[in-house]
Length: 291
Image 1 (cartoon, rainbow, N blue to C red):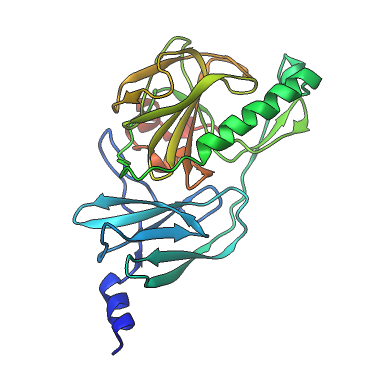
Image 2: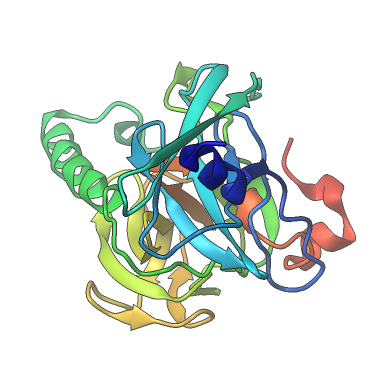
């Protein structure tokens, strides 16, 4: 038996779901579809080992007595096989594949009264382009901090729009919905879902008042349409700290929090990161998820 095979057996790569949490906290739930999550158990993990998915470095965190690698699967990902690459400090690379399946997302049609939020003018377009660069920079953030992924809900309330919907504003198709909209009264406190550092904040044309929190190793959360921002770039916050308040700034039809999660530079379904019973509205009546 070769040395490389022995090392491979020591790792014994296993794809799995971390299981549903029945507390106010959650650990990621695997869903191998566009917008979902792929999880890889690493029984033989060593701290200096790095893991990549589709050539992008991904987050690794402890779970029980083992370690887990988590890869975000972008909404534009086509069905097929994609590769995990485990690269050890000694130069050995171990590869294994996971199969992403097709998923059809439903449509959502919304009427926006401010037509500029659907068809921006020339000056608006310049602003949007500049803001796009700020967003891209925030999405690319990668620190070596080990993330804590036992998320809590940033706010509780009715889910007014789910992730992945094909969106039509005033009958014009736009990008799919890349987050979770939680309806709540304006001024409701918004809390950090996990400890992290503020890497971007401000007033954005479409997103209104928005905050980006870096939780480590490419896992980032986003909070948009706020009425108030109570933190600034560089601030370090703890899980549960109030970072802003629910509002209706930017392109909206009413007060709500747009909550998004980024992993390895792609947006994933936040529901997969949140506890099932952390939002009383859902726990008491799952059908209240928006259709």
